Length: 161
Image (cartoon, rainbow, N blue to C red; front, side):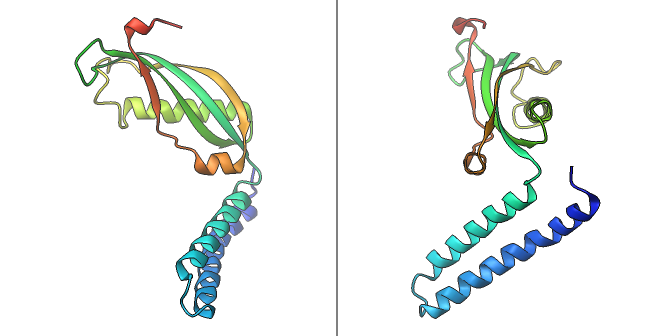
């Protein structure tokens, strides 16, 4: 857990790192007479942002959490049998596997109870039942490139797990 002093300093360090990265990128672009200014600036900003993310999350671990959800009812686009379940993966920063599991479940439940899928769920009186299928550590690189919104849906004909 970050101490209040570390948390306060990291909040000020983040914008400073990004600002310094942008300044270095701009200077490198000027030195090269405007050639490659976009390349230099983008590379420096991306590397600086990665360093900032690493520094801010150095007390955390990165986790990949694969979840299974069921007890939903969403009409499919072609009005065939409804969607009754899904699989999804979330990449989470947490102190422990227990915290990662709880954060992942919380994020997915929020999507289904008050977020982007809430209006589509005809079984609106209850949240989906979630189960952790897999939980493993992930790298910073994987976490940075993760798409934390995708679902793989299935219908009643695909059966229960």
